[in-house]
Image (tube, rainbow, N blue to C red; front, side, top):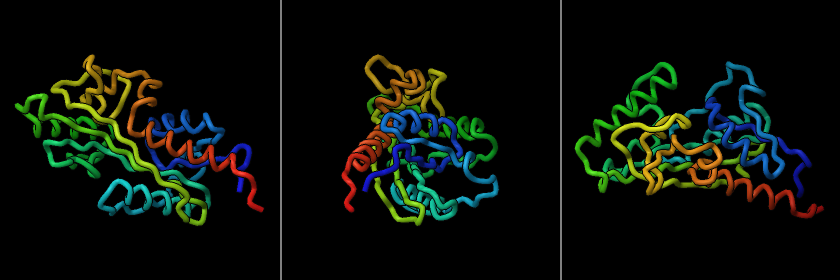
Length: 215
């Protein structure tokens, strides 16, 4: 079955940075990407994210929001996994430090905790990766597709760059020593965990749109 000429998908996140990244990638295959704020009221209840993996939480969000708003929804769950910390902060990345407040305040507290946890560790033991799991659910809550992407790097001991968010200023991604926050938006989309998962999803959607109508 083919998709409409201009299909639309709602991205289940309140993070405008994520919406922009996903919109740029899915737009290349003719998918209109909308944010939750564009299609739903502010009192929309958030699905409970009590899964034990990124994939489980992405599925819970996609299915929950799709059923709530009656539209096709793409959700992701992503975070930082540090080798020396046994994979932490993992699924708890967004609120690892246990601090509320604004996104900027949470990010600052999380990064401060990351530095405390890795204090005095040499770069050889600071290996890490960002992981992103995505799930696309139909309006009835049925799962259409799931993808995963990774972005491998090393944790720096001081922040650099202003283009990213979250742990990006501390995440060194190449031999030149640049952090994720020093990459341009196009460079980040080409290499990041979210970009990888979104391109895999875009590939699936492109193939779906190209299929002849089964009827």
